[in-house]
Length: 394
Ligand SMILES: Cc1ncc(COP(=O)(O)O)c(C=O)c1O
Image (cartoon, rainbow, N blue to C red; front, side, top):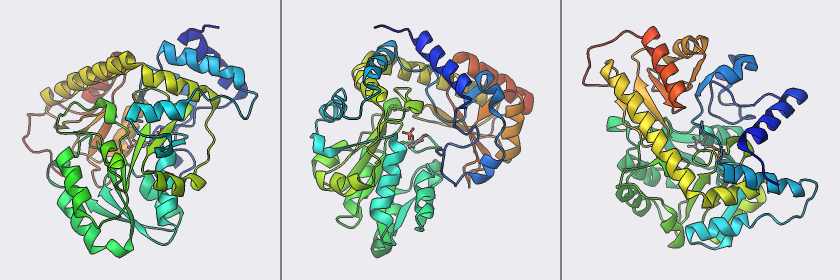
């Protein structure tokens, strides 16, 4: 059976309409449904009636959708939709092969958000805390709160980068209180990387045996040669857990697939806390996505091209942009972000939620060329042109 992307997506949309199920993505929050942390933003959520007409620049999604090969593979998977134990397309061994690790080093999850939760549950249930920076992807901190743990959050350093010496110092100062360290690389919402030298400095400097969760959700978009994945540390046997997702480069956010790469004994510790419930379609789609390197290269190229174009236009208009390595960027708007989100929303453009304490910055995801044009038009209607400043302000 073959299926075009249009017919698959069209059929799915029709099913949503019939069942009156709306997409669950919160237009103003990047946390996952069911998490409480973005409560205020969620309360302000607008009806989804105009979902399809919005420019979706709020959740760092892949606007182009999965490739034909991936859609076809998912469609093939449906022949097992009525089964429990079915051949899963070898997704775990394909991921292991992709990273040069063993299958015992992989935990398959429903999105990488589940990895973040599972690490939290595994290492914080005994009253320990997580150490990380703020702003970062707050899901880890929200999960800590939900299981009655807390986080030690350090401010970003100069130029909005993660201050590795400060993290190392805090990890040593608070060693007995900590369950693990969280490092989002590249960081969301700034889009900035922690270099491979800095990751080494972190891992060598913190107390031996302290687990480090390294969230590489945006790994595939990075160009900076000073960045590298931390998977080799897993092979060295260090207590490192790398979280990866199919939601971004592979455009499978709604299908929910992610995984952890970690030493086998850590995977064993975490497995009881994972759901173990991945849908059959995405198991097949994931295998195809891993192999579709041409699609990944194309998405990366288009994303970077549009990010550079829009950033350049904003800078020419007088606004400072943090140089991102991801499929989103932050622009310094010099005003509180909350009412601005609503102003964009009225113009059918959804932009990122507030990221305290950087509340005079706006996070913008990369969308299609047409969506980025709509964003720039709205930006110019909302903000006046400025003579370019040299400092972004903190
Ligand atoms: C840094 C980071 N980690 C993890 C996730 C979770 O993504 P998913 O659960 O779709 O894999 C996101 C989603 O935006 C993210 O930005």
